[in-house]
Image 1: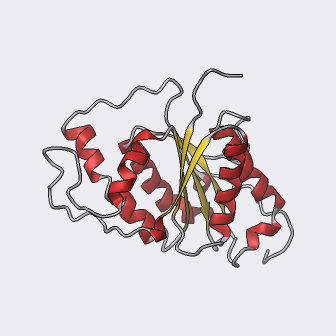
Image 2: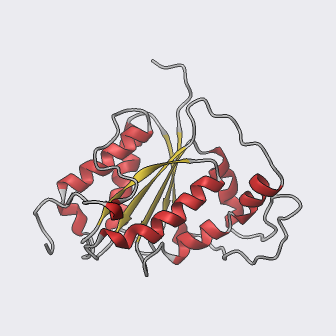
Length: 223
């Protein structure tokens, strides 16, 4: 048995709809990570009360946000996580409003890193992050905006972007439950992030620059 402490995996559910395709896939990843020995924390953003960045400059001297809302609970979680999963459907070519507001509130962390030059905590196994994204449109170009947002969030928080599981053409509520390959890919991602399995073949960085595999199988739901 390894002497290393369990990896801490922080999983953000950005969808405002509970029990939908995004949450189904995220739960597969989280369950697999737990089974592989990781410590997991699933955060449902729609349950929290927080606003977007005010651009008030309150963090300029300290790198700490002055707005006292539920985002204050997330700052230490983000700081302490070894692995981060961002799970969001695509809304208007980007992340959901809940997800984007959380990203924007990391302005305080951006100030700490780039203006105040605070050194990140050293992690022997690094800090890694990945995306789980679903879209009703079939064109993988639709994921480009979300990918840029997540990369900026990861870069600000010294998290290495590994890539994502991108599922175009998934539109009906709960449809992904009938697609074995998609569920298996999510489970593989969870195990990989927990250092319990190989890198999933479906994990890609930019699905919009080349062919995207169809991980839906040819089962239930529209083709």
